[in-house]
Every structure is written in C-alpha cells, then in structure tokens.
Amino acid sequence: MNNAEWLNTVTMVEFLRDIGKNFSVNVMMQKESVRRRLESEAGISYTEFTYSLMQAYDYLELFDRYNCTLQIGGSDQWGNITAGTDLIRRKRQGKAHAMVFPLLTTSTGQKFGKTEAGTVWLDAEMTSPYQFYQYWYNTDDRDVDRYLKTFTFLTRERIEELAQVTASSPEKRIAQTELAREVTKLVHGDGGVQAAERAAKVLFGGALDGLSAKDVAGIFADVPSHSIANGEIQNGKNVVDLIVEAGLFKSKGEARRMIESGGVYVNNERIADAAHNVLRITRLTGSCSCCVRGRRNIWW
Image 1 (cartoon, one colour):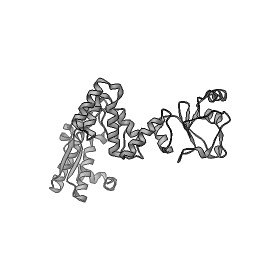
Image 2 (cartoon, helix red, strand yellow):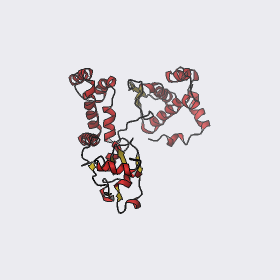
Image 3 (cartoon, rainbow, N blue to C red):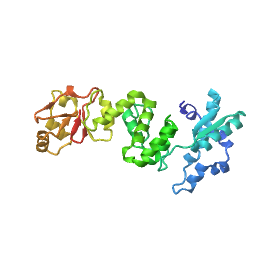
Image 4 (cartoon, rainbow, N blue to C red):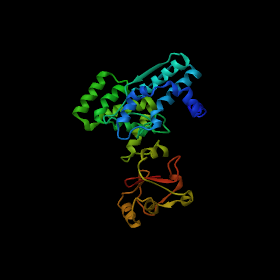
C-alpha cells in the first residue's frame, strides 16, 4: 500500500489534534533511536523525531482498512511499531501486535536496508542476477559463516565444513561461492546462477554465447562506457576510430599497434586488421549503440 493515500489527505491541524495528542514527548524522548540521535553530534531533526507518529498512523490506517493486527520489522523498528499498537489501543480499543527480528548487519555495523548505500534488490530489474551473485561472493570472511546460517538452508554440518575451509584457505573463497550460489538460486533459480557464473567467465575472455546486452551491461556496471549515435554506425565504423573515440587509446597510432600485436578484442573476439569495420548488426542482442570497455576489450 502507498501511505500517501492517507498521509496526503490529512491536514497538519487534523494530525496534531487526532493523532499527536496521543503521544507523550517524555516517552518519545526515552526511545533508543531518539536518544541515540540526540546524543550524536548531528542531533535529530523534527521530521525524524516525529517519524514514529507517522508510522503509528500508518498502522492505524491498515488496522481500519484491512484489519491488520501484526506489523513485522527489524529490531530497530520496535519503538515505531509499538507506537502503532498503542495508538490502535487508544483510538480503537483494539489489539494489535509487534514482531521484530535481530537487525542484520555486516561486520562493519552497516545494516541491510533499502536506504543504505550499495542496496541489493531481489528484483532482477534493480539488481541483475550477476550483480546479485557478486554481492554475496564478495562477502567478508568475518560475515560468511553467519550469512550461510541466516540466508541458506544448508545443513549445520555443511556450514561447519565451510567455516573450517574459510579458516584454513580463505583465499579460495569456497564458502562465499556456495553462499552466492545458494542465495542466487533461491531468488533467481538455477538459470540465474548459471547466467551469473557464465557472466563472470566473460571477464576472463569467455564466450558471450547466451548473454544479452543487458547481462553484459550488468557485468560492467561500474566500467566507463561511451555512447554513439545510430547514424554514425549505419554502415559500420572503423575499429581504430571506434576504440580511440571510446577512450581506450589516446591515439590512432597506438590503437593500430595494439591491434597488430593481437591485443584488441571486440565482444571477446580478437581483431587482427586495423581496417576492420565494426558493424551495427554485430552488436549484442538488445544492446544500445554504445561501447562498454573492459581492459583492451570492447563489448558492443
């Protein structure tokens, strides 16, 4: 539900009169989230201070509209959720419940959440299967054992085996590989795991068979790219001009020498002739007119 349906229709005066009067500032000041912010150097804004009132009002509306009697969240939301249960009791003499789970954090203390940097999404449109797989593969050694217990259905015995391997041979990242496979399989299925691992091989010169332009763009999401108008490539574009324009080399002479020495690839296929034309029809299926650069390789 979009809470704008009810928040955008209530006036400030109505909210203060009907909702605000049910909350004691003394009680709000005692909430851990508020107290922690008050003690910090940055302090707390009025918006943040009143957030629990807004969330409590959401709970009341869900209770009225859909008979919602249970709100679930991370342990950091306990105060906000119980504010809602109190409001329902005061306004409707109703009974509602709160359930929270231990907050998931990394070894650095950063929590999993949509407001955090580096958010990982379940939706493949938001985080590709490759990026999703890599997120778990890059798990810190200090976190991998806990994540295996939290996010997978592996047996305790198997997780203990992986913990021993991590302790003895951390560089092999065997536990991280199994974590990435298991979680990616849960979210994206076996096909997602296969696509993610196939995409990883592309980084080391593997074939592009079965990968779409979207897959490749996901692999190189953080790699510089260069756009070219369709009109410029209608009849093809000389590979030297293309890679210099894309910024892979500073001069055409440097580009030609690299091509002659066998160091230039287009879509992971070596280009041996500096006169080669890169054609529009050779672009990856579904791609736009752009070059995605990786080392001395151009994905087109």
